[in-house]
Structure formats: C-alpha cells, structure tokens
Length: 340
Image (cartoon, rainbow, N blue to C red):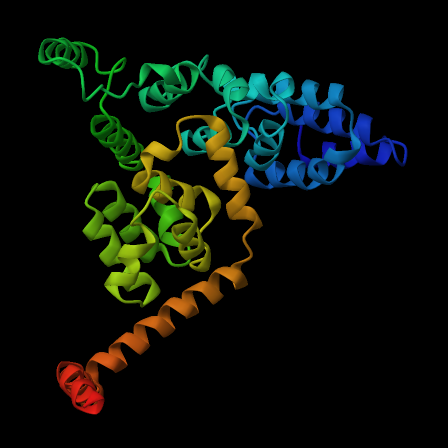
C-alpha cells in the first residue's frame, strides 16, 4: 500500500466519522513493509487532529497496533504514551519509537504506573531499571544514624559496601544519582547529540549540564553566573539552600525545555526528588512559571550585580566609607564633649 491508500480511506469515510478514519489509517499504515518519511508524516497529519475526538477503545487499539510497528510515527507514539497506562502500556513495553530520554520524562510525569510498564521492556537501559527500582522501594535509601555505636556503624558501613543499592549515605546516593545521569547523557547516541547541537542556546545548556554533573558546586555556580551575566556571589546564593525556586527561575529565563531544566536541577539537588510526586511538582511549577516573570528576576539579579560593581569601583564611596569609619571612632569623644 502507498500514500494514495490513505487518501482513498479519507474519501470513503463519511464526514465526522473520526473513529473509523483513525483506525483505518493506522491499520493501512501498519501493513506497509517500509513506509517512507512522507507516509509517516501523512499519518501524523491525519491522525493527530482526530486524537481528541476518538474513544478510549480506538486509542487502545492504535497503541497496540503501533507497538508492533517498526517504523511507527514518533509524534503519534509520544501522544499515546501520555495516555493512562491501560492505553499506553503496549508502546511503553515494546515500541522502538520511544527513546531512553522519552522514558525518563514519562516516568517523571506519570510515576509508578508507567514506570512498571516500562520495566517490562526487553534490553531496558540499566540506569532506567535502577531508577524504577528506586521509585518502587524508596525506603531502601537510608540515612545512617550519627549517634549509633561504633560497632553498629561498622556493621552498617560493611552492609553499605556489600549492598550499595539497599543502603546508601546521602553523599553516596547523590553521587550515584549524578553518575547515573552522567551515564545517560554520555551513551554515544549521535542522534541525541545532534538534537542538542540544534537546540538554541545549546552551548549554555551543555556547559550548565556538565558542570552540574561534576558535583562541584563552584563549577556550576561559575557557569550559571556566566550564563545569566550576574556576579558569582549572586549565582552562589541561588543554590545555597535546599530550595530550587531561584534556580528554576534562572533556567526558565534561559528558555530551556522542562526535561533539560529538570536534568540540571536534579543533578544539583539529587536529594529533593525521591519519588514521582516530587518530580511532577517540579515540572508543574516549571510549566506554570511564565518566562517574563523569570526574566524579571534575572534583571533584578543583574541590577544587583551592577550596583555592587559600581559601589566597589567608586573612589568616593571608598573615601566616604573611610570617613564614616573615622567619624564613628571619633563620635564617643564628640558626644562626651557635648555633654560637658
């Protein structure tokens, strides 16, 4: 079958029968041995506008059909993967059109139901498998009791060495999280690299991502100061506590997509996202933060930077500060003489 078959289906289908057209178009596409890019694009152009008008049963049917399709249209597959797991499961388990990065984003948005379906994929990336296990059993990451007896501490330390996945100190857990993220971003996937290079501001994103994944706060803060054109001390204050709101505004002002912003944030604050709800909360806050609001915050930081630089550079201010200090030293004597 060729692309003309899709047009014939549309002609034969009665007006308003989105249900039949949706199913028939996908069925015809799945019968193609090796569809062209044009045919893939035509299917997306035909089905995506109908998506909201078709029933759950039709979406479930199409998801099952495309899960076995080697050249499934990526945009339609991604849309179906955002559906509840009873619809999306065949694609989450089998579809080749869903990348590792897509899987991580889906787990972040939908939590354990999607994660459990994804865990059934053959040849699942070990990093994603580890992430799913951590989400299913978050209590396995424990904080060692600082008041425990030395013998008990030794036992716990040995248990940590023997079973790193069941007991971890906060520092080890954070480093392991960064290591897993670093592994995901350095798999040698040339397609992903091309996408990053094509992304506006890619150099800034890559620099922030790489410095965040080092685990060295000063490196990341320096890169953030350069990206926002603000003073290092201000950039340092943005990540000085366990509140990611200032960093969220900074990343939003740079117009990063939510998955890129989340990757940087979780690398800086790995301990703040122990369960899917925390990830969903972050993504919701990022989506709801208007970029103009974030830019206003950055302008305020830049103004503070310029004011600090101007104060430090002004000889008048330096002289006045010295005079003020000397006045303060002389003040007691002056007040004493005035009392006389």
